[in-house]
Length: 165
Image (cartoon, rainbow, N blue to C red; front, side, top):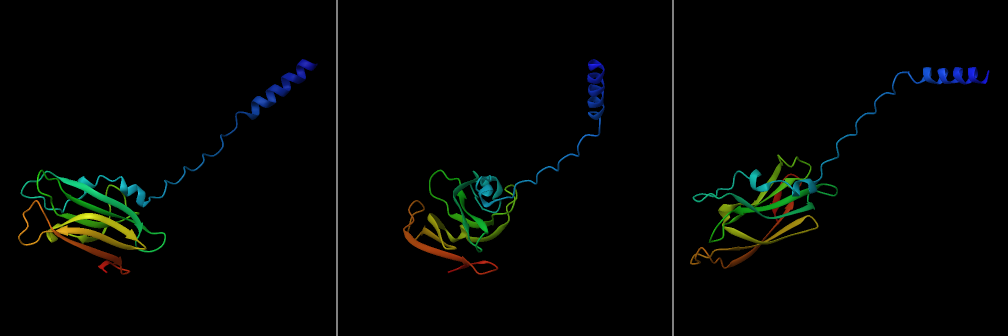
């Protein structure tokens, strides 16, 4: 009798195991993009408007910094790039990119320094939403190897664009 009860219990348990599987759990949402994701972007391949003629050896990254430039909670990336050079230094371009945009197609918010201004970036600092770029440029009689005119350019967000402070 005991064997019979045990058999009935086992059959009942086995019958309950053949039911429908539980519904699949929804896959988690992809993680939110952050400005830190853009710091790892392939900037040398993404910058396509820097004129490195006549000797085009490509673009090289100077510096990149992440900061809240357009208000609290909104982080952006400031990037300085220049052309690869063998001898004399090449002027820099400094631009700001939306930190929430994809790393393979960053959205540029503005160009702070363009290479046609003929300035080299020595240092960038960002404090309380203000970008300060220490530069050095060429005096009229400077040779191409040796710029001699230091200057600092500062920029802030106006609500719709970056403006010189």
